[in-house]
Image (tube, rainbow, N blue to C red):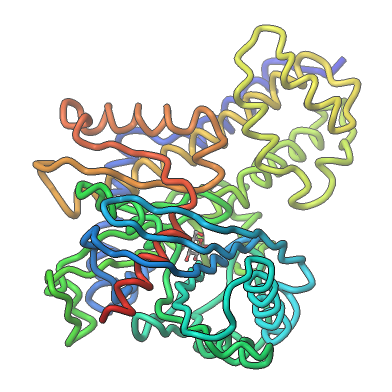
Length: 448
Ligand code: BGC
């Protein structure tokens, strides 16, 4: 039997407390977020890069067939998309390719060659012509210094990518060169797009209230349309409406209260000091946060009789998908938790172990959702301080889609925070928006 005495209880409730986000904390996050947004837009040092995307909101009348390439996580996708105006988008063909660790941590040339080979395969399998120009929208979900609608220099890698010789280079030029090496010369990369921008544009194509695009997946980020006159750091930007979508890169926001566990994870990561919000919120890290707490409790002999089960022994070995499954178990006998622990090779977990694992999972997921709600509220308030308008937030990403309690937590924060105005803010799952949005942006860019 595990010892679970009063002092252990105190320790566990101390951990829970350090992960709590109060309404006061949310107000503080919003205030700091606004000040970082302002600095980022003015070109002063800020944890928010606030990158102009060279994209304006869609008109909804864009039509035609386009290819979209969606790169930003461990899988990348190629789609052939037909835009039919008024929100109607057909995906004609779609293939998913796995980017193995050796590829994303090898040389940039190898990685772009692999992508170009996959495009060649896609064109062949779906019998697309190798002559006649095809416009491609390239979703590239890493921080870029965007130089034009179809150009951008990689600032740094994250989410476990480290391919060499890419940082500081124009990723469109690298992809063009790789396409050439494959003998493909009829693809025009018409647009380079962040996944949040694609998600926003894809939803806004059929919903004119949509003004926030968000990803809660392996990584996290958001974008929104900003008045060009407020983007003080970039002179001479022009769009027909006077607005341009800004990619906030909020994953790097660093004005949050961190626990010792967050500090540990940051220090051991491939990008210490960066992406501090992402490391507390996104799917890549939640399992690791829970694992770090669990290891601490095992070492104190509070969990698993002091023996570390192998699933918890390796960094990043405890996937966030398990966390979502465990935290959804509200039953008395914790059968979901028990069965999952058995599947993970832990046959002898007691009730106390299961309950603690479930509670840790809940704490970690809840903090992530509360921070997410706070930063979404911050951007909405930035655009519309008195919440006079209706807002649709388009959200994509496996964490938001698959973690069942996530949406409920966000809703409850919005209700507590916005009170009777909460009804004006709707958030919706905008699945696969990033690829579709890239096609719409390619359509606008090729029209220009
Ligand atoms: C990247 C963003 C991206 C987000 C979601 C972050 O790690 O820096 O550019 O939008 O992940 O994929």
